[in-house]
Amino acid sequence: MSDLSLVSAFPKAEDAAWKALVEKALKGAPLSVLESKTYDGAVVAPLYPPAEDGAVIPGRDPGAPWEITQRIEIADPGTANSQILDDLNAGASGIALLFQGAVGDRGYALSADAATLTGALEDVHLEWGVPVELQLGANAKAVAAMAADLVAARGIPVDHTNIRFGFDPIGTLAANGWSDASPDDVAALAKDLVARGFKGPFAVADGRPVHEAGGTEAQELAFALAAAVSYLRAFEAAGAGLDDARKMIFFRLAADQDQFLTTAKFRALRKLWSRVEEACGLAPEAAFIAGETAWRMMTKRHAQGNIVRGTIATLAAAVGGANAITVLPYTAALGLPEDFARRVARNTQTVLLEESNLYRVADPSAGSGALESLTSDLCTAAWALFQGIEAVGGPEKALEVNLIQSAVTASRAIRETALARRKESLIGTSDFPDLGEDDLAVMDVAPTKLESGAPTVTPLTPMRLGAPFEALRDRSDAVLADKGARPNIFLACLGHPADFNGRAAFAKSLFEAGGIEATAASSAQTLPEMLDGFRASGAPLACLCSSDKVYASDGTEAAQALREAGAAHVYLAGKPGDLEAALRKAGIESFVAAGGNALETLAGAYDHLGA
Image 1: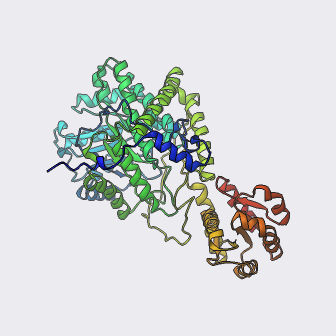
Image 2 (image 1 turned 90 degrees about the vertical axis):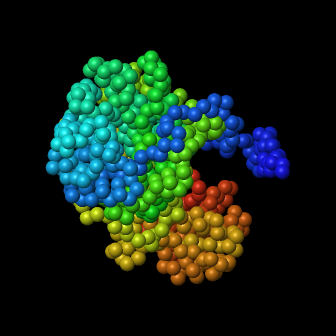
Image 3 (image 1 turned 120 degrees about the vertical axis):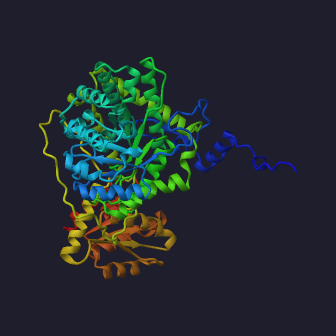
């Protein structure tokens, strides 16, 4: 029997043939209109040839699963213990204990006392090598000593434990504006722990402060790399050999909903660290990289959308070679998540790991032209930023002189503008909202804040991209509670459904993203029928929706009629082109179209409503 080759049944794909079809579809527009740019300025092309250098980047051992790490951040040790045991018995392979003042402390964290740590880890079999990651902030030395004492008190051989101590004074300095430790202190702590038999790692180079504040992928990589080099120098100065020192460090990055950039970022970090190792005269070894789904993409509105974003981010980090991944529960932006949200976070990883078998292939993106190119671009950009940090004296000095903060602030402003114009979207929040969504439950635990030390640098302030739209939705809820109905706008659809459906859907999504309920007709509408609908709606605002052809023939008459019928403000969905002057004269006051500033439009609508 001859072999059946499916490949032979298809013609060989050629770039020239693809370009010919694309150019025909673009109707004279240049191919460059299909390109986009990352926030670091790298061009993302629509098509890439296979990569010439497609070597696998060493990460997890081939066929080795990543750790499903669950975040523990509740102050009550009994509840923390129940969560840990439930997590470990239901699919998690490791836990991350978040202590007060650590990066990512948003008011829910464990306190730095022995009773809390002992209670939280009751009946947890540390001797089985359960991965425990200590995310430390203030009082890191005390927590580390407590953990070591707990292992000793239980009579557990130290070499049976798997504790990542997670000292990160540079990260906490960036996140909080102050830190009670330095890299030299970390080196001294590590030396004490090594003497007690622990192998580490002891320090984490965490890029999340930059990412949470709105920074770019290259900025996050540069900050993490600079922190790692600072810890490496401190360990060496304390007497550790470079080979031992590098094993004392691990990394942590945010995993975002941009799948390909996230995968490229995790791959890029390995290449960047390998370059540092080579500069130290070491043969590169795979670094341990933990990932956590990004805080800045989490939303309060339609929080179920966070499940999708978290799944994409987890997939991206896993394909990028992450050794451990933490998924933020989908209700995290609303408060302290309940058991169901924690279960969904666990199962997100379990499905990808056990059912999708993502872990079975080492570096599956190797050889992909697009991902190799993105990885290379990120390496180039991050290395240049890293050199800039080194030039001023390292990450702590760079924070003192606001080098890092100013760069991140500039990137944040660009990102916020993109979201305001909905060029970057959060489904369910900035686009396609649901005004009738149900409230979601979280634990009845009030957030607390660790008493702050005296700031020595300007902190990198965390942000959530959806917050400005959520603030507008809060205004809508207040109006609903006060008056029994939401602010509303009438979508004045004119002509046949084919004329207005597209623009009406756009306008509905736009206005309801700000909590302004939109009503529209679903059948063909004449001008008199449209006006009757407007009067019946009782809406104070109107948005004319139709095709360019209908605007040209009936737009001015419709606009004038809406004003005469009592519309306080009349919008038009679409770009007016040559009709703008005539439409404005007839009563159109605002035009809404793709690329416009949605937040400005929505804030203005509330002004027109007097709400």
